[in-house]
Image 1: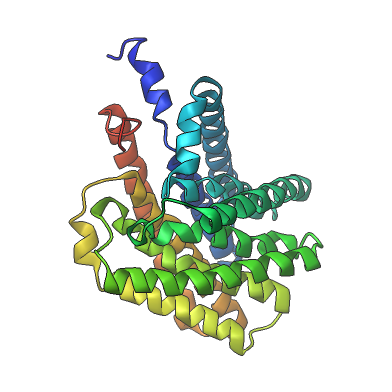
Image 2: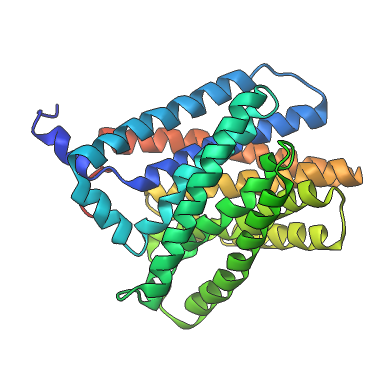
Length: 323
């Protein structure tokens, strides 16, 4: 049993990357919403998924706010860390994803979450990019797919923004996200091909490579309203990257558990939802089976991640120095 003296220490080392859990659960929620719409079913699970995801976000926000109040220096250290810095936008991304999840059921709540998430994400994007430009300590080996997180957040904005009526704002964020996706994709492949391999604990973040084109396809479909050539290019880039990473399954299965395992969840949700959207636009059953298959796989992975995270927390494997 932990003593009162131990508990504050764990709060001090509470990682910002915990918010990746909200991204994963939000992706699962939106995925099942989409699947029910495609199959014309109501499984009655949407309120439960939204409730669990929202509760998790609130709990994590309370804990991280407490960390900010009690251990401000620890938060500042994360803001200056070359890897952890990029996880701060997971807070605003969580708000945007919750906005998408609430959109079919509570429009006013969705709008409030979207406005808060969009404004906060712009702040995070400007802050992170300023750090990238004016840094004094980054090295090539610091580069990893987690750097995509701010870009992914930008391309998420149109998914709820367009239905809510914010067309130009959505185009602005989509364009920003696409710009940084192209820049960072070039840098990450240079780093992977010509420098030391990504360290083991960050290997799962390679799945983040799937998210920008997959989410970009969904967002662009909202903006353009049709399945044109550019939309197809985005979808098939995401699908190729998914296949590429699946061919490396043995490598990922050998990894020990880290909180970075949650990087598997949201990208798989994104390509699964994108596949269901492709089915809606083309009517080809291949995309429906692919989307449902990915969603089924995602459901199993999220269940595993929840169990492994709970075990790690109970065994003091998370919220410790150096994690």
